[in-house]
Image 1 (cartoon, rainbow, N blue to C red):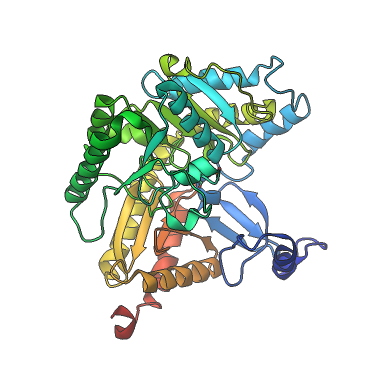
Image 2: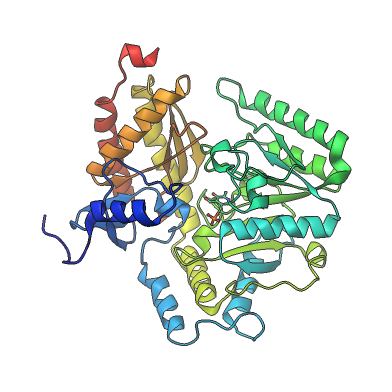
Amino acid sequence: MKSMTEHYIGPEGIKAKRASYFYPCTQHFYQNPPQIVKGSMQYLYDEQGKEYTDFFAGVSVVACGHCNPAITGATISQLGKLQHTTAIYLTQPVVDLAERLAELLPGALRRTFFVNSGTEANEGALLLARMHTGRKGFIALEQGLHGRSNLTMSVTGLSMWRTDPFLEEEVYFIPRPFRTGVAPEEAAQDSLKALDKVLEEQGHTIAALIIEPIQGNGGIIVPPDGYLQEVKTRLEAYGVLMIADEIQTGFGRTGRMFAIEHFDVVPDIISMAKALGNGVPIGAFATTNHIAASLNRPSASTFGGNPVSSVTGMAVLAYIREGRLVERSDELGHILKQGLEQLMNRYGTMISEVRGKGLMIGVELMASNPDVGAILVDRVLEEMKEQGFLIGKNGVHRNVLAFQPPLVIEDRDIQEMLKELEVVLAGLEPSEEEVQ
Ligand SMILES: Cc1ncc(COP(=O)(O)O)c(C=O)c1O
């Protein structure tokens, strides 16, 4: 295929520069990664002009589609008018966005502080909880992921993302309501028992429990019905706040505006980022009037709530409403899940479980032998990429295929991907030896 332009350095050139100028912690997907140079709605294009249907959306970010003109039009127009002032001057886009979020957020959550990333949003949420309760400790779930700063990493359960050797000590981890080979209700009961124990022993020193309503990086784990309500009731008995980390699940991803709405629970604080900017950096944490009153000492974010991010956020929320993206995520999510379940019926030796809600679906490979599962996941990713489909991966053992496409994906894209996935899986059936 003909090269799209002349000056691209190509994947090898990029890899060489990364090796020279990045830290060794930076990794990329694929043995033979493409150089992505263009995006349009659910499609990405490499430097050769090859088209890929994107089933990962930049890790749940580009819900409204790549370079969606309805959103980039607003962003570009704002860039030409006013880019930056900080909160010490009055600008309108940020207050409009705060007002719109208050309309969409569950329960009485209505005050928002804007930042630039998910990590910062969780950091702010944790600070707010400490200031409101006057307590220092936190409870978090094993295998959760909440960020890269010291505090958000301290509440992150996934060991691969806990790289700081000096993490906070007053964080109490409880098992998540999921264990391979165990009924979800039993796993939930074990998790609640562990929560009871922490609360009995430490309850009055704990500011908040932070939780992803559906764990993303941990392998797309949906808690059984009733679990989150039980958690909330127990926390309330000890005056411990609940922070719902909706950074990955927010804004329609799971077939609800916020994933917590599936479970009929209103948290005390919600943190948001990713899809709110559709690729423009933005983060936020929101709470009630009562709790917000505790964040009363001066605080400011240089870039948080800047007019460009705020106008983009408004355009995103308008597009989600007008395009019925929340409903679409629910409807297409069912189609995607059913298709993947059919593949599980055919390739049961490889596929252990299909789970998730809306357009956030995980397919775990070889749960009984996750190291082999991880190898297979990498092979599936590589071969699907060759066929023009970008799929994600996650899970404690990195043996879960993650399907989190832009919510503008179409039925036709899903069917084509499923057809190709079937071909790839058929060629990958593990040998008897590998299964052992
Ligand atoms: C649930 C969750 N919380 C927090 C973060 C951190 O967000 P960021 O990378 O924007 O700092 C992520 C990132 O993937 C996430 O999935």
